[in-house]
Every structure is written in structure tokens, then in C-alpha cells.
Image (cartoon, rainbow, N blue to C red; front, side, top):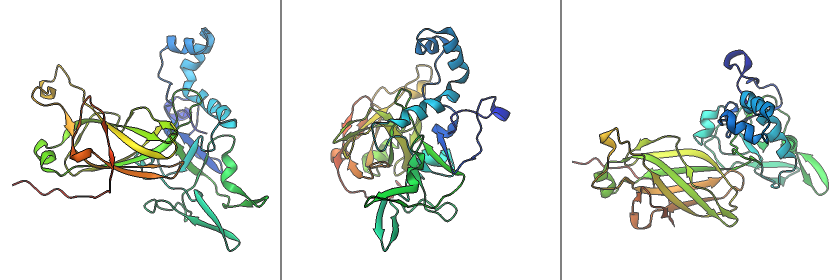
Length: 315
């Protein structure tokens, strides 16, 4: 489990190279959520202990490894700390790695037939992508129970790199959702000519609702017709039932070009497609009547069909 920077290059307390059968890289294996507190915050986290606060200040990322492991032992969900195989952290964040060789397994002809949920992810070392739980139950992918017998469903491999996202607070584990969306090619969208901002998403399911999750770390430009894909982490909502979209726009009083006086910042979305890694379900939604998502106003989506469009150039 790699949760901190390397000793030899980054001055950390960990190591980056894969050395086990499966190697886990939570949040990319470098910076962990919740490890950006000041000294005062760390002392508070350690119940006022100056020594404990100093230790956490110097090695918070490194300490997360055993904390993740402890919470993986008695995690109250069968999908807690699920990780997916991927060549790199960047590709995992971009939503490229979002399939599992062992997510749907059926006994066929004395062996296991593997159904892959996403076909765009390339096999690694001629093996389908792997998913398994980080921590105490990391070997769960090797065997399944069938008619009272333990059957080895996967061949033993080495140095498999798996990535996952966690939260900043205990019990740390989150569910992973891949979000894809296209900016509309409607006349209103073309006239508006795109927008700068941060799209945010709220998922509603049969077991709860997530917090408002930003889809990008910082403001960027989203032009008409452009398509985007990313992986985000949030609470377990069960089966996804609906989606709410929000648009975050940060105006700078120093930069006069960022001022919006006549109209509010807005984005015209064509469709939004969301799927869950742990549950395996998916949902496509669209803004009602093609209305824009306006900064500061949450927009509840409606179910629809995903139709990828190409914007025609304006005369």
C-alpha cells in the first residue's frame, strides 16, 4: 500500500515501485486527503498531544497506510476500498480505467467466463483489468465461493498496480463514479460560445445522496460540442436514480475580464452519463428542455438517451 512520497527523490517515508502481487496506490500514492492541515489542526486531531500532532505533521501521508488497513478489516460494506488496475494515476482520474475482469463471473463449462463491462480499457499483460479491495481483504479476487467450495477465479499475478480514491475522514472509503458529458451544440450554446468554470455533480440513489462533487480541480474552459470524462469519489448511493448538476464560477475582482454584469455564468449541457464502479449500474440524463445550468442554481436532470453531436460551424 503506497500512501506517501518516495524517500530517495521526494523526501518522504515510502516507496513507489510495485513489489507485491498487487500494489495499491490510494489517491495516486502521494498526497492523501486530510493531510493538508496546519500544525494546530494536527494537534487537535491527536486530542491535544503535541508529540502526536508533530508526528502527524511530519508523516501524515505515510501514516494513512495503516489507518486505511485498520478500517479495511471491518468495513461495513462489501464494496469498501475497491481499487481498479490502471497503468497510471492520471489515466485512472481521467476515467480510462473503469472495468473489472471479476465484476461479473458466471460458472460455465467448469471454468469462469469473464464478462468485461467496459471494452475501451486495454488488457494489461494480456490479462483483463483487475479489481479487488485494498487492505485486509486484498486477496478476495483470487477466490470465490461456489456450492460450499472455494474456487480460484483468477491466476496469480505480480506487480499489479491498482488505484482508488479515498475521503479525508474515517472510515475513508468512497465509491467511484465515472462521469461523461458533452457541452451542447444548440443555438443558445453556440451563441454563448462555451463557459469557464467548474462543473459539479450530485448523485441521487436508492440508498442516499452524495455531496456536491467537483468534476475538475480548477476552472477551465468548456467549449460547445466538447466531451469530457473523469472519475470522482463519493458516498455509496446504491443504484443511481437521478442527477443534479451545478456550475461553479469564481469571479476575480482584480481581473475585470472575469466580471459578469449582464448575464450569469452558465453552461449548456447536451447529456450526462454516470456509471458506478462498485455497483455496476449507469444512467444517462439531460437538462430539462435544454435549459442551461446557471451558476449558483442547482439543476435537476431528467432521464434521456445519450446522443453524441458534432457542432456545425457558425457562418
